[in-house]
Image 1: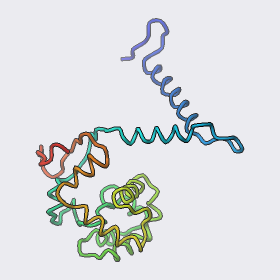
Image 2: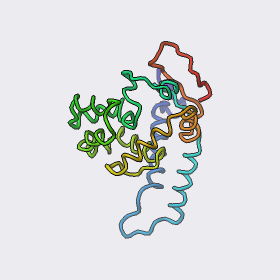
Image 3: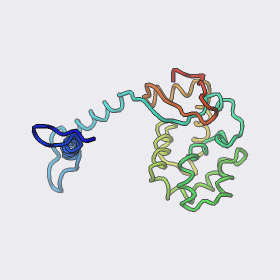
Image 4: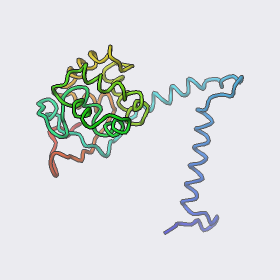
Length: 206
């Protein structure tokens, strides 16, 4: 049922749409690049930095995740959800679909996530397809994680050994809380467990 203002005859949906359009226009005006030859508005860069800083400092609630228990990572055993326990795991789940669309065969993907495939061989399997997926939404998420969690800005043959080492160093008791709360800024995380039905987590505070 639509709610309509008795005075104006405008529905709530229309009012919210108008407000959203106006807000978007204000944000666009504040964040759009200046016209060619025009001077950048005074304080614009500082204002954008301040907005970014405040957003980064704002805790939030993650309402839908499929995280496995931390113990499944620190005491890893091969499984369908955790085929390996190295940096290749970052490229599973959603990004695996992008890789397959980009041309990675099912056989090569299986080798890529196999626990006994070396890091160098994993990179050789990934390298031909990485340029095609690195700018997708899922690829961007992996790039941000690699940069912010492991300090690696560019993924290539020379940085893979560092990524492999940094990834292994992270996986130890307590790393969920450090990443989720301290680095991602999560206040709480609602996990829809795929390990068991109505599963109680060992880390309710994360």
